Length: 391
Ligand code: CAA
Image (cartoon, rainbow, N blue to C red; front, side, top):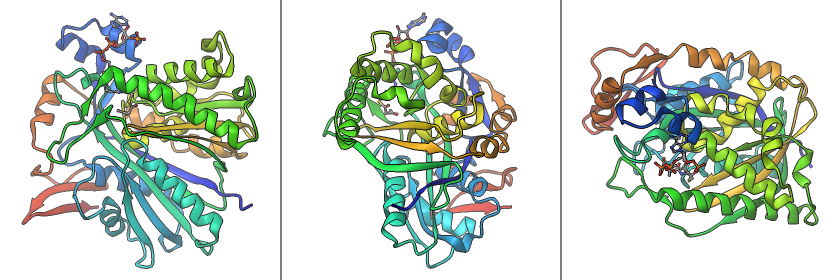
C-alpha cells in the first residue's frame, strides 16, 4: 500500500482578532463563561480585504514553500463559506497561485467536514495511481459567522489551513482505515440567502457527540473488532474544534465509549496541545481540525516521531470521520519552523466597536480603499466580478 499523507501544511489567519474578555464585558457576560465554559481566549476577525479566497491563498503559499506549482495535479478547497454559487474558490486559487492548467480544481462542501472530504479524495487519488507522481493541494478555508449578539457569537472565527498531500508524507502518513458516520440532521445550516449560519446550539453538541462515538465505533470495526481502551495507543487525538471545550466533551464521549471512567486524565496528554492555536483563533469550520493538528505538531513538547495520532472530523448536517496517522520523524521541527504562534502574535487586537463595524460591512460588497498589506487581498466587486490583488 502506497505511503500517502501530509507532506507540508500552511496556516493563514486574519490580520485582526478580538479579545474574548472584552467581548464578554461588552455583552454583560461573566468572562469565565467564554474562557472556561467555552475555552476561547481570542477570536479571529476577517477584515474587509480578507475573504475565503485570500485566506486560502495565504495558507497554500506557506504549504507550497519550495514546491514547484507544476507538481500539483489536484487542488481541492473545502469550504462552507464560498464566495460564489458556481465558480469554486479553487479556481480563484489557481489564478492567484499560478497552478498549472493540467491541474484538476474544484470545491467540496459539507459544513465543517468539507475539507476532510477533499483530503479523502486526494488520498484515494494518490493510492489509486491516478496522481502519476503529482501532489494534491487541499485547502480548508472559512469565515465562521453567526452574527452580533447571538448565542453563537463567541464561537465565530476565521482562517485557513492548507495541506500538501503526497506519497512523501514528511509530516503525517495517513492510514486508509477510516470510520465514517453520516446522518440527515438539522443541527447547523446556512440557507443560500443568508450570510450568517443558523444553529440549534445544544442539539448540535448532541449530534457532534453521538457522531464521535459512532465514527470511532466504525473505525474500530474496520480494524477488526471493538477493543476496550483502543484509543490508548494514540499519542494525540485531534478533534474538530468549534470551540475548545467541545474537544474536551468529545474526548469524554470517546473515552467513555472506550470504557474509561476518568476521561479527563488522558485529556492532558492526548488533546491539550492540540488546542493551543485553536483557542486563539476560534472556529475555522473546515480548517478547525487541521489547525488542531498543526497545534499538536507546533506546540507539543514531547518527541512524537513515529507515534500514532487520531483525527476526528465533524461536519453538521452531518458527516463525521475518525481516522489515524503516524507522525514522521522531523515533522515537529518542520512545523515549528513555520513559527505559527508568532503568526498569531503579529495580529492586531481590535475593539468590540471595530469588530461590530467590520461585521456590519456587507459580505461580497466590500470595497476597500487601499491596497492590502498582505500578499493576497480582496479589492471588491466590479461588474459582478470579484477582484483580487497579489503582491
Ligand atoms: N463560568 C464558567 N462557565 C460558565 C459560566 C461561568 N460564569 N457560565 C456558563 N458557563 C459554561 C456552561 O456551564 C457551559 O459549559 P458546559 O456545556 O460544560 O456545561 C458553557 O459555559 C456554555 O454555556 P451555555 O451552554 O449556557 O452557552 P450558550 O447556550 O450561550 O451557547 C453554544 C453555547 C451552544 C456552544 C453556542 O455558542 C453556539 O450555538 N455555538 C455555535 C454552535 C456550535 O459551535 N456547535 C458545536 C457542535 S456543531 C459543530 O461542531 C459544527 C460547527 O463547527 C458549527
